[in-house]
Length: 140
Ligand code: ZN
Image (cartoon, rainbow, N blue to C red; front, top):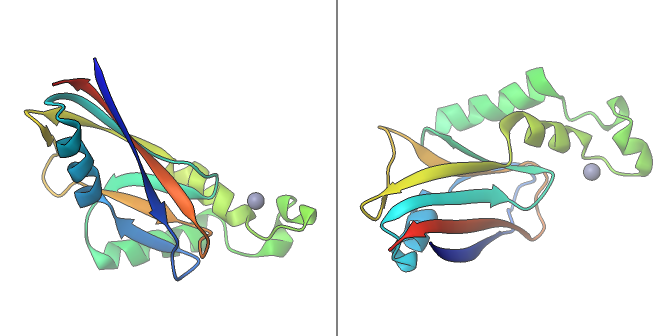
């Protein structure tokens, strides 16, 4: 089995941001030379997510509104975690809700997606350097 590991770095301008990383992941699959296998894409942080969904800006706003409005409002006074002096408890809960990693199949050297599927980095507590691991595993 062959393996190829790469790190994507992010420092978002806004504290919350959704970024399409499909092309960057596909570039690593090409660089790996792996034809059949999987790529694991995983946020290396506890206040961020990696997920598969639609490249549609209205939906990104819906996701952020759903997380902040329904899942866990960004209200530091609500959370025990923030008694430590932090203010990002909501970001941890959003990461748990959306998940921190995805696995995408590789077939004949390409990401084997259904229609409309794309890979996203969800930054829930940004404006600092954070990273995502891309690990391609399989046969060349
Ligand atoms: Zn925290």
